[in-house]
Length: 248
Ligand code: NAD
Image (tube, rainbow, N blue to C red; front, side, top):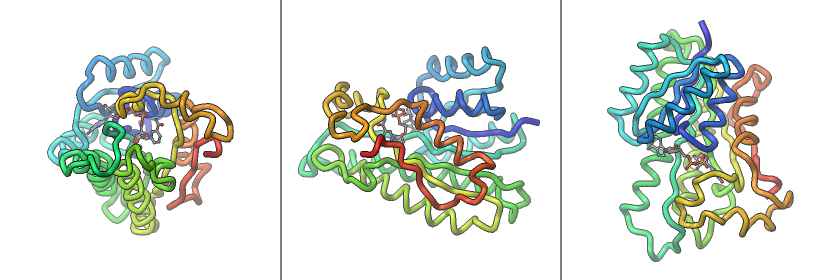
């Protein structure tokens, strides 16, 4: 039976690119999405058209009951889980800290941090050799913002990604002897629809001169790093990060 991978937030952007590449590498892909059925189904159809295997499951990763249902769907369909990509993530509109209320901050933390925790927890319960699993690999989508801080734009988002980094490091040590590797990828400016969620669809064009390589990256360039960290070629890599940021 094929190895199974769960990619959260895989209906578009980096998650969709990871889903397409994972299917090419032979995984059966669980395409998680929050609400856009048509987009998730289009990713599944693209994978199947290329001869791969995929299925879509709607679930909000910030909701514990949804996450339980998501993993139960994978159990029922595949009976195994080999890899998890914690990709689902959100931004709010660009803002200085004076204008950030608790609702906004908590919404970001709930998806980016709590969502990653809940999915990692369910994955460890299934993968850990301590619990009878076969081991596996987890990649968390962090951001260069975790290190750079996103001043005047989204310090709340940057703080959430720093928490994802700490989760990655701590969890990697916790499960290192249970057959599970945990790593992170920190994208820089990647040309996806996410920037429109921050209120600036043209953000890549505005900022690309600040990138040493003088361009935004593609979702596919991020997916390549994610799939390498999941692969056996990365068998001695855990608790580490790949920056995919054109040098930014
Ligand atoms: P995107 O907005 O295009 O896609 C994010 C996906 O996550 C969407 O499909 C969305 O529906 C889904 N999602 C959001 N909340 C969810 C939830 N609660 N439950 C399930 N799914 C949910 O973003 P992207 O650019 O593809 O970013 C993917 C990841 O990479 C995110 O974690 C993001 O923070 C990170 N990242 C992106 C960039 C960039 O420049 N695009 C840079 C650094 C890090």
